[in-house]
Length: 132
Image 1 (cartoon, rainbow, N blue to C red):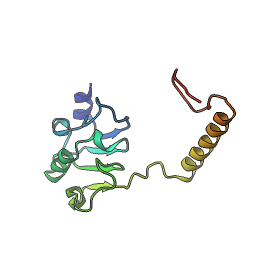
Image 2: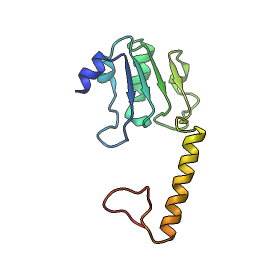
Image 3: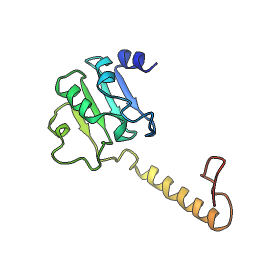
């Protein structure tokens, strides 16, 4: 259960798609469950975390720190209060920006394009409604 996980974990690392069910999955109530020594990492999607609640939790030292690669609004506005805190690391949505990852993405895109133009199902498509 999420509440047990949050209350017992030292590190919480989020890796989930943004859906109606995961929007603000981590809000004030969830942050309140976390240890004061906990570190929250979000590399999924910005709106999975209620950014205003995160700011309050970090400002009051309710949790120890956060590291986020995504924000609710991208790019993060220069006047965002999170930027004033010393217990958060904010990266500009670059977690997947390694040479290997970008090379793999380009290769997959080329393979999908070639297959689609050849009338075949792209090799990296999924689901029962794959369209060429």
